[in-house]
Every structure is written in C-alpha cells, then in structure tokens.
Image (cartoon, rainbow, N blue to C red; front, side, top):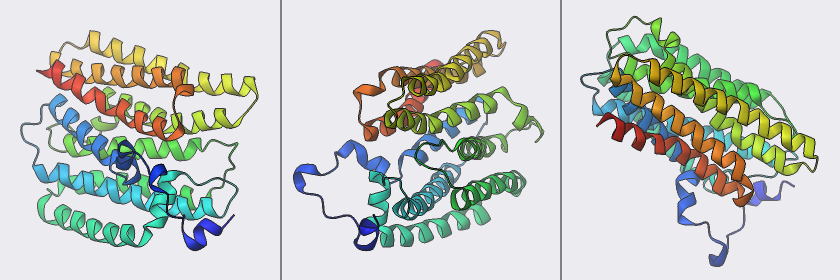
Length: 295
C-alpha cells in the first residue's frame, strides 16, 4: 500500500499519459484562475475604481501555494491510509521536490508583494483569512475520515476561506465599513457556491463508491437541494436589486449553481478527473456571463 510513496508512482506509458486538459488541475492552477476571475467580478460589482494588478498576482500566488501544500499533505496522508491516491496527489508527490521549492519561492514572492505593495488596511482583513486557513490545515492534519465519510467541516472552512480571501481584496478598496463584508449578500452567495463546489467532488465520489441506492439518492439530494436554493436566492437578489451594477454578479452565481446542478445530474457520463475539471469550469464560465452582462 505504501509502495507508491516509497518509490513514487511509476512512469506512465505514453499511451496512458494524462490529457492536456487535466494539467491545470495537476499543476494546481485551477483554483488560482477561479480566484482571480472572481476577484475581478467582486471589484466590478462593488465599483472599485482601481484595483492594482499586483493584487490579482498576489492572490493567484497565495492560492497556488495553499493548494500545493494541501495536495502534498493529502498525498502523504492518503498514501498511508486506506484511500486510493488521486491523480493530482500522485503527480504532486512524484514531483514533490519541485513543488516544495516552487512553493517556498512563490510564497516569499507573495509575502514581498504584500509587505511592499499592499495598503495596511488589508492586513486587518487578512488576519481573519489567515485564521481560517490555519483552521483548514489543522483539520487536514489532525482530522481523520474514511472513504465512506465526507469531510463537511473541512469543506465549509475551505469554501469560506477561499471566498473570503478573494472578496476581501476587492472590499478593502471600497469605502464601505469592514463589518459589512461578512453581511454582504454577494459574499454569502459566493461562500455557499464555493462550499457546494468543493463538496460536490466528495459527494460524487462517495455515491460512486456505494452500491446502496438510498445512499446515492441521499448524496444527490445533498447537492441538489442547496444548489436549487442558492440559484433561487441569486435570482431573487438579481431581480430585487435596484442598482443594475450588482445584477450581473447574481447572474454569475446563478450560472455557477446551474452548471453544478447539470454536472450533478449527468456525472455518470464523466470520469472522476473530468468531473474535477468540469467543477472548476463551472466556476469560470460565470466570469463570461458576468462580463457579457456587465458590458
């Protein structure tokens, strides 16, 4: 069971090499792309006059480092347990030395940008974000769950940290008071969308591993119901908003929820790797919807 950890995964024959569309996921580039896209959406929605380019760069770098570290930890932990390692974990472990060096360099670059380029106001928001990231890694290291358990607590913290970390960089450049960020319907909707996006993979894998039809139906309902409620809430917010500038945001949320709903109903057609990539696409397509609606 530990063979792949001792020697690393064997070289895959050329006929079985991973397809090109999977490499953004293998290289942990998927989450940074989603974060940067939604930072733009938040900035436009909250009418930030100017958001420095280094803000987008720093967010992308920080998210990349967090995801690389998380996948390296998962690779080690799954290698020693009863869970089969996934392609992204095998890939990260196989090239662990490269990822470790890059993570340190990228992390230092992000730190330099934060210290030298960011206004001090952002540091106050970052404390809460840092606590959530710390909580996420604490759960990753010390919590245990088998293949038949879904890590809901970890997924909730991950979704909240991702959404908050993305939104706060735009919010800090507005004239709003700090306590309004956590109360904003935009952030709340995005938090829910992120949590459901992260949980979707676990629910799909959990249903796939079970032969119990009742469990399969329960897992599907666990995603279908909240996605339906999120879509309905986004539609209500979009229709009731008096300011037209905020409507495209909720159209984007509605699009993301609808795409995840479609994946949930058609998941049997796709491989686990394809579902992971499509789940990320479900959060990137809303950027196009927002951009068209905003224009």
